[in-house]
Image 1: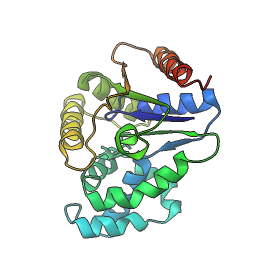
Image 2: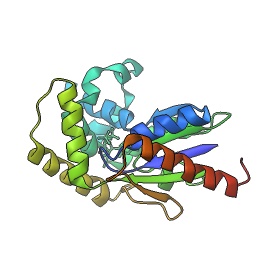
Image 3: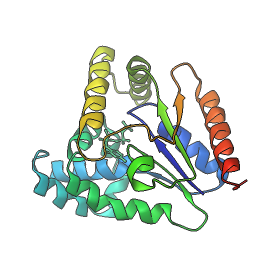
Length: 211
Ligand code: CDP
């Protein structure tokens, strides 16, 4: 059983994907971490995110980088959204993601193009979203919990800019797949969003005779 969860920054897709993986007893891959690792590796090498060849070379990052706390920083996310626009970077990370999805028993993957490009034949697809204001509030709260102060208005602007980059790029732009279920979490608690996600996935699995 393969579940694809896509959506913009701070929509709740990561939390939902982790909860689905726990619920169905399958492994989970946060594919954003791979793009963040490319970004961090490039930044540390002093590379230029606009240079396709330099960004592509950074896809050969060591696995240990996936545990680096700097991956979670907002600046790394913003840089990831720049390096991820290069087709060569996306192609270099594709096999790794498809291999993860193909393991026996299935998997949950979350990202931007899981249901559209990585596993178009996934059994269930969710497109998780929320208004930019709600997403900015969540990010600011998350950062404050980690002792980092953040400006709400600057965060709204950053989220809108990141959406525009992710949705406007030529290679695998962020969009809802035709056969994905839309889950708007703007007015839902985390618990409500998870319950709704499970109900949507259950309905899809029943359709496919997988339950
Ligand atoms: O956690 P958040 O939603 O802020 O970001 P993320 O999922 O870690 O992704 C960081 C950036 O990587 C995104 O803004 C995308 O540009 C890129 N990305 C992508 O292009 N494709 C994916 N499957 C996952 C992330």
